[in-house]
Length: 94
Image 1 (cartoon, one colour):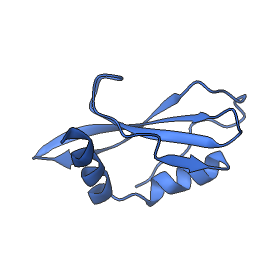
Image 2 (spheres, rainbow, N blue to C red; image 1 turned 30 degrees about the horizontal axis):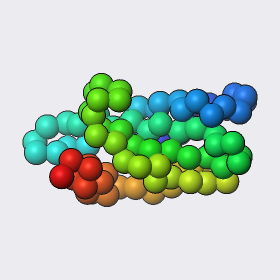
Image 3 (tube, rainbow, N blue to C red; image 1 turned 30 degrees about the vertical axis):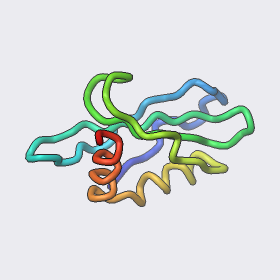
């Protein structure tokens, strides 16, 4: 999966920034995937995946990403393959 951080040189913020990721194929249809990423008060980067096209209304994971740097967070996201994303989606809709 080819994804890159869209924020460089942006001030620290606890407000999540939502990034569009490549869609995944589920049940013969494309499902939008987004990453909400933010810097926590303790300085670590956190993130969660959100599925579907409407923010806040579709299923999402817990805060499953945690890294000391934004680059490390994005490396964790890049390491996920489509079958991992499908499994995560199935786990949150059941």
